[in-house]
Length: 100
Image (cartoon, rainbow, N blue to C red; front, top):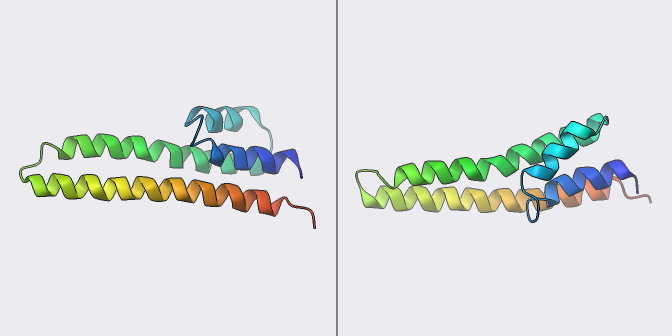
């Protein structure tokens, strides 16, 4: 298995232990376009939950409390989907690099 596949998948799996920092470092340090593209995608998917937290906090000041609860539940579900997507993409990239 090549280093490029390991770095690309590690940028997705870093949602559990390094968050935004590892994909950013990988994206800035590497010269490989494949790894850089996957690190950029992982970086965006790691930043989106922070954006959802800000939107959820602003929705707390909504006029109707059920609207706030609905928005927070929706954004939480989307954040969970992003975590699952990162795991899926990390496994997919590792499977691309597997030698048969």
